[in-house]
Amino acid sequence: MSWKRGGSDGPRGYHHGNLKETLVRAALELIAEKGPAGFTFAEAARWAGVSPAAPYRHFRDREELLADVALRGFSQFEGELAAAWANGAPDPGTAFERLGKAYLAFARNEPAYYSAMFEAGVSLDTNPELRLAAERAFLVLRNASDALVATVPTGKRPPALMMALHIWAMSHGIASLFARGDAGRRALPMTPEELLEAGMLVYLQGLGIGAPAEAGE
Amino acid sequence: MSWKRGGSDGPRGYHHGNLKETLVRAALELIAEKGPAGFTFAEAARWAGVSPAAPYRHFRDREELLADVALRGFSQFEGELAAAWANGAPDPGTAFERLGKAYLAFARNEPAYYSAMFEAGVSLDTNPELRLAAERAFLVLRNASDALVATVPTGKRPPALMMALHIWAMSHGIASLFARGDAGRRALPMTPEELLEAGMLVYLQGLGIGAPAEAGE
DNA sequence: TGTACATCAGTGAACGCGCGTTCACTGATGTAC
DNA sequence: TGTACATCAGTGAACGCGCGTTCACTGATGTAC
Image (cartoon, rainbow over all chains, first blue to last red; front, side):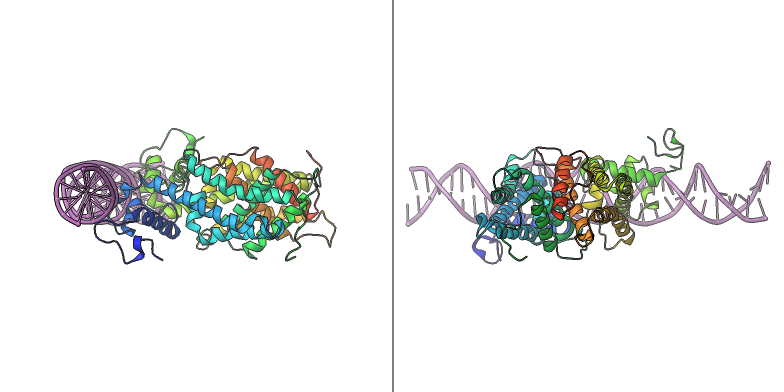
């Protein structure tokens, strides 16, 4: 796939045409290859086939590029989670299982994004836009929790926010310990997907939300 | 506290006396300050008050120093977890609650160790000693799971390995998202300890291990 | 439609800096006798 | 107990390198009239 304007062969002469996108792409490649530490502004420029001064037209510094990568990551993450959840269709149980798989799939397929989002030390405090993007991604989990909680009779309903945080924590834990698509992954006597699904079933059971779909079990 | 031999004022003359320990200490300080990325061999030497060539007497390179830090981290982590678990005394439920708190306390109090252990990209595959240390730490969770499982009648017992992995994943998830003592921490409408304890109660409930101690609840 | 001009997005050379690493060296420590 | 010697753990100067950043510049693009 090409990310240069027009989709043809390389930069046409003096102007690159799509340098900002290309730099983001370069950052992703380099992070995937060597971790968020082993990625430099200069190397990104080289990767894009451009002079070392060129990136400064688009990003103040390395940090700003990293933050942009994280931002795009959260946005794509949100999109994939939302697509998997699909408003809880056909039923919350089935959709929730898809959601978990989508979470792990993202960590596995986009380790560079995942790194930039959760491990690169990009501060959410100093970047409201990034914080919003992160919250929007979390909101998908929150909505799913609401829907699951709603399958339980009023009065016996657990707090949905806490539930969403638990789901996030276990998903993130499994993703970063066992499912990421780069180094640092640990061996496991089952697939991460199986581990997460089992964990979620136990957890929901504990909340009194017993496998609403009976799907797969 | 002093980590120089004799505990007095600084290096005495030509020989430092305890350079290896001091370099590890330096790495921890620098990682805590700027993340695992922002720590260099040269700066560690400067921190230790020693020429840039001196560290090569003790570590082949930066990577080896990082691995040593991670190794010590896992060892200390195991120690603290084991102490908190205390062989399940006075009862598995109470001890398990202590264990969870100890996990989060470590992540909060030793963010540099935690980074080196889980985020610095030090590969377990190429370092058998490190892998062993990590496994020994996990074994504490595994033993705790065994003990909790044993409180349930035979035949209804869940698989303890899977249980230990779930516990690890949720603890690690909460620790790295909400409890670490450095940047990257996310805000939370409760303490990480409360979140973890609630999560574990729900999870154990789901396994049919209902709050064996009734302690605190 | 053509021309003049402003703006944009790059170049490429240059710089200072700190890092990793090496080298021959030397002061301190430990040990054999 | 004293001396000679081997070994250990540092020094400090030096190097090549790549990074981040700046600067005056210039080719390409867009727009006003």
